[in-house]
Length: 232
Image (spheres, rainbow, N blue to C red):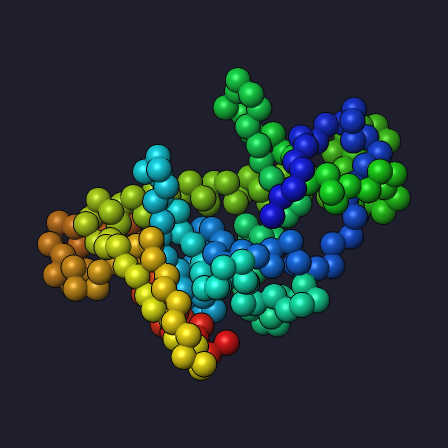
C-alpha cells in the first residue's frame, strides 16, 4: 500500500502538504486489514473479524475484505469503497504512518511521498505554517495515528487474554462462488464457542471483570459474513 515512506520534518517539508486523495485504489489489492477493538462494533456488520499471530507471537485482529488474491471485494474499478460499509482506520490513515527511527524506539510521523504536494496552497492539507509550526491538519493526523497506535496495543492485549483463557482455535473456511469455484481461507484464529460456554468460574469472572463479552460477541457475530463473500 505504501510505496516510498519519508519522515516528516519542518525543514524538508516546510512548504509541503499532500495531494487531494479521492480514491481508495491504493487499497485495491488488500484482502484483509488490521482493526482495533475500538472498531469491532462497526466492522462486525460488514466483515468477518478474525485473529492472527505473527512470527514474534504478537496478536492482531483482521477484518477480512476479500478472499481472492489481491482483490478487495469492497472497492470498485474507480477506487470507490462500497457505500455504507465501514472503512478500517488502517486504510483511512493512508498516506500517513508512524515509523521507528534507526537506533531508537521512538516513533516518527511519516508519509508516502507519492502523495506529496511540493508547494501546498490548501491550508487544509499543508503540514506546517509560516512559522514552521504544525498546522491543525498535521496535529489532527498525529492525534488520529496516536489513538490508532494505542488502540492497536489494547487489541493485542485483548487477544492475548483470549489466548490465555484458552478460547482460541485455528480455523479454515471454504468459500464457494455462484460459479462453483472454491476458495480456502486459512491461517487465522477464532473463538471456540463450545469452550466459551463451558469456561470455568474463575475465567468467567475475569471475562466479566474485563468487560470482554461485548467484543467476543461482535467477533462471533461477524463470522457469518464469511459465507456471504461467495455471493459477491
